[in-house]
Amino acid sequence: MAKLTTDELIDAFKELTLIELSEFVKAFEDVFEVTAAAPAAVAVAAPAGGGAADAPAEEEKDSFDVILEAAGDKKIQVIKEVRALTSLGLKEAKDLVDGAPKPVIEGANKETADKAKAALEGAGATVTLK
Image 1 (cartoon, one colour):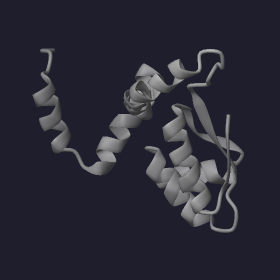
Image 2: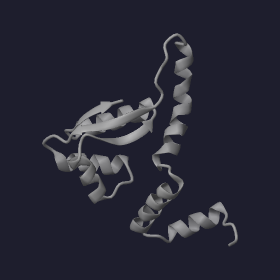
Image 3: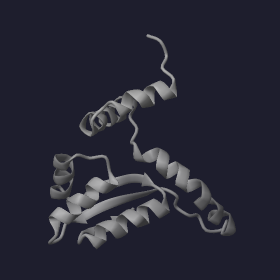
């Protein structure tokens, strides 16, 4: 099989439906044991890393897990936020919310974790960062 260029891959993805593309992303994550959120977290972590040099005596945690503790009264809103924060489908997001406490995002930087926590708490969920 000939190696495809980036432009050829993008053109192929343009022809897929959103459901097909979502299935591709899940399959890609399974095969390569990665998450689609990881590259974004790394890209955002680079500028935030400069703050750690200001306080070398204090070891700052740079990787956070956003844990959904409870959905609260507005379960549908929480499911919508989980879907917005992840690449999960409706059923997977509902299962995650129903099975709380569970991690929503793992290995995120501080800024991403704080935004996710704020979004989930705004929807009525109880969230912790670890």
